[in-house]
Image 1 (cartoon, rainbow, N blue to C red):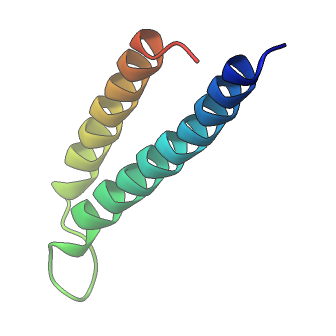
Image 2: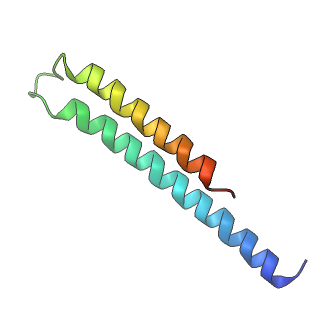
Amino acid sequence: MNANRIIDMIVRQVMRRLVNKGVNKSIDFASRKGSDSGASDGPRKTSAPRHAQNLRQAQRVTRQMRRFMKF
């Protein structure tokens, strides 16, 4: 293997890990944001369906990103 292929392989691995960490952090943030927007005694009853909808949307976006990003 030449040096260019080795460098490309390392860069792809690093980028894949960074993107995965970023996606996981954003999904965690979105899930916490939905439950913290109500009163301090707990989440509102309407936040559970909205939370599920946000989670489904984040998972769909993640699948689309993985489909178009070939590592």
